[in-house]
Image 1 (cartoon, rainbow, N blue to C red):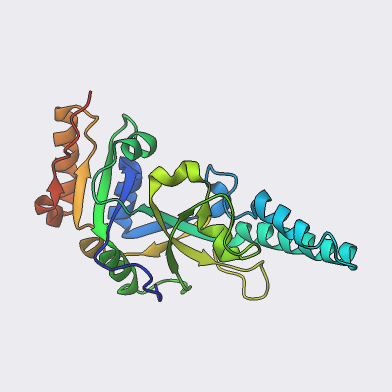
Image 2: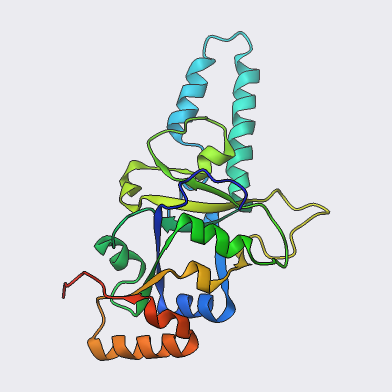
Length: 241
């Protein structure tokens, strides 16, 4: 992760099913998913408000048809690039989120990782990767139009206002359409990056929505797999049945 656009002391959280967390822990990897696999179908696309602005700006242009064709090409180009963009998402909240527990874990067994931007960055940068790629980091903007109408980056870090409860920060890998330098993994699905769990897992919270016996079983299992976590498991402050 080359850039440092976010204060390294900022707290970040990630909510995971137990299955995904155990995969992270056992394999020392985090997964970057293809942007098109996310549920928000606006992800990585040019917003209609930006298209309207662009078309309005050329309505009196003598070369209207030519300009209109250029706008269409740019629109299609950026929207197509979402197929080659990978992301790994975190939330920049200081405290646990009842809503995010419910959305990403529900009543199933799961955990929340609480760490910092700096530790997240270090956990990746200190590891050798099977295939090196640049990772970008940015806070997500929640607004109804892109700040730059035909920017791939802006399309990737801008979401509609109704998602602002996420307070999201994302890690991103920007690939290009396949060519002779095609990545040695299935871009349509995503890829894994090696991480150092001892650096990344600053604190671990067990889901507050599971029974106490099950919670103890999860803690025992996790600490047997990774003894260093015994001192890092914290009590959730949520008490809601």
